[in-house]
Image 1 (cartoon, helix red, strand yellow):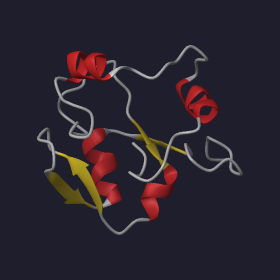
Image 2 (cartoon, helix red, strand yellow; image 1 turned 60 degrees about the vertical axis):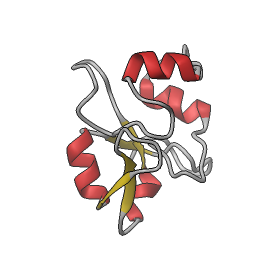
Image 3 (cartoon, helix red, strand yellow; image 1 turned 30 degrees about the vertical axis):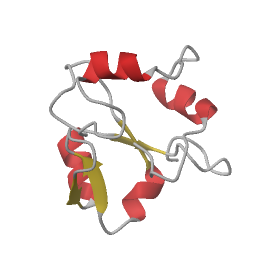
Image 4 (spheres, one colour; image 1 turned 90 degrees about the horizontal axis):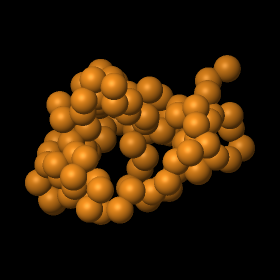
Length: 104
């Protein structure tokens, strides 16, 4: 998860995941994998047990975050702490090139 106005740095994402073998999924693959269209994917309760969720560290500094509900254009709002808890997210730096990916 990254802010709607941000893009993950591919090298940071590769390091967080622990693999250089990543690629952007097509909208069709996203729909088939998650059951949801891009832009409406809920942050929790659809992932298989082996699935990992990563959240950009910059998001923890926000007061409130909007997350997809599974329906395009509808969001739920929660604190970053609650979003991490609900999604079991791993918080890493995905967007700031000047900072390391993993916390020190």
